[in-house]
Length: 257
Image 1 (tube, rainbow, N blue to C red):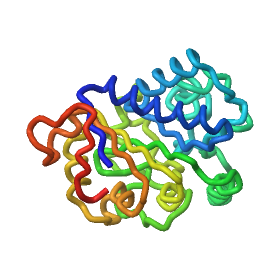
Image 2 (cartoon, one colour):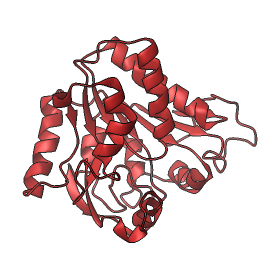
Image 3 (cartoon, helix red, strand yellow):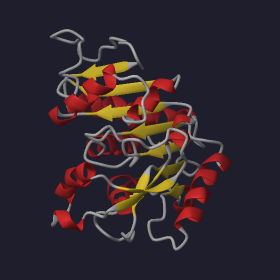
Image 4 (tube, rainbow, N blue to C red):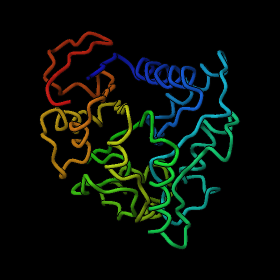
């Protein structure tokens, strides 16, 4: 299912509303969260909504998609720092229920196995929130990652490192490796919400629209999931064959997802 809105603000409001509805309907929900520039306005909206209509957040459990290897939680570019700044600290979530992969773990393989096992022990993800990279990665699952993989360490592609270099003072500081939730873990979520905004995502969203499920395009694994919503602004949807003037908030229900 596709949802296309005119503006980033409308995308952020729709996505935040979906998350808030889950949290209020099921206070013990288990949410898979994402980071990145696409998510910043959405988290701002979600914080605003939950502060205006507060619910019980004490039983909410979250698992983030990924974390750089080698960055401490206090590093301004770590994803733990990002989540604290944009969401966790503002909502005072229960620390024991907030989870991110441990990029400083001594036993990386053991930490990865434990992370996937912790999600399963929590009852699985009620919803997984995703962004998408310009090369089609979800989480940090780069092209040709096996769809059957679970949480794992991965070498970041040069494209991903270039894309993420804008967040660092020096692009050479971008870590070369990360831990990421596996595609199989993502596909086991009961609902998936993929968000793409801006003209820089138009090309990959058109490619995703046309593609069959193919490990060369990690996001295409979502075509195997029965409950996926792809939310875009008009710029990210500009190259989709949905007509020259898609209706704001429309659900054109094109093929493939």
